[in-house]
Amino acid sequence: MLAELGAGAVALGIGAAAFVVAAPGQTRLPRNRRRPAAEDGEGALAGAAEAATTLFGRLMQRRSGSVATQLDLAGIQMRPQDFGFLVAVASVVLMALTLVVGGGLLALPVAALPPLCAVVLLNARVKGRRKHFAEQLDGTLQLMSSSLRAGHSMMQALSSVAKESEEPTATELTRVVNETRVGRPVVPALEEAAERMASEDFRWATQAIAINREVGGSLAEVLDGVAGTIRERAQIRRHVAALSAEGRLSAVILILLPFVVGGFLLLTNPGYLAPFVENPLGIVLLVVGVVMLVIGGVWLRKVVEIKF
Image (cartoon, rainbow, N blue to C red):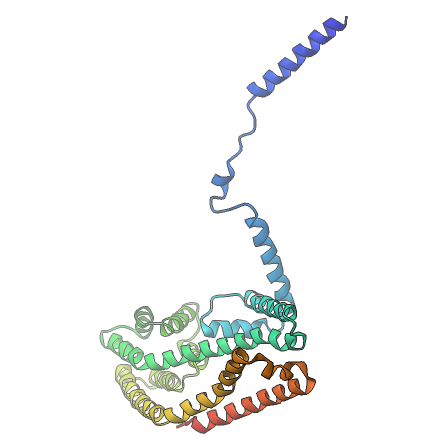
């Protein structure tokens, strides 16, 4: 009896194994074909990063609009929450490193460096893009005038100039063309571009275009006249910059001199500067020195800044 049961169990096992081997299973697509560029752990890491940036975006919701505007003006293609999250991570890392090396009192000032550097970077990028836009404006108006003389309409001339110009003029004029295609009047779109680029010369050109659209006449000649005026103003601006170069260089040297001397002493004789970080009075003196340095830098900048 036991022999018969054992033989039956063996036969049943062999049959089940044969069925599993022979039966067609569910066809599965290999992982490398489903996600060719994916690697192990990449999905989890990307999900964690997205969750962290989303949470940070909720925390900076009130400031996200202004940060997005600054990033757009600076030409940085990044979401506000991503940019803010990177700055926050940099602050935490620097503060942790400062605490590790024993500079507990300097942890908070060091943690404030990444946000300060981010603001300076954004302002510098915005200023640089606006400067390049102003330098390209003369050629932009000449290209537009040539397109109008060739028989193109106002919008065709703008589209042609947007394709042929360099950055940032190409991006700003492309924005204007796209806004007009969805129904916005061209003059308000140009005025907004002038406001974004803080360009008084382009604002004059926009006013000339608006007046010409109301009273008629040759827009090409009007743009040639505006381009000539802008060219003369640019020559005067460069002449003023050359005359004030010595004062601006002196301001830069005076601002950088304390940092250079402090860095040299820190490398050659660190103990000489130790009281400034070990004594509360030294920290107060450092803060007062930084405040006075900022005031002096603003003062020197206003001295060499000439408006006309």
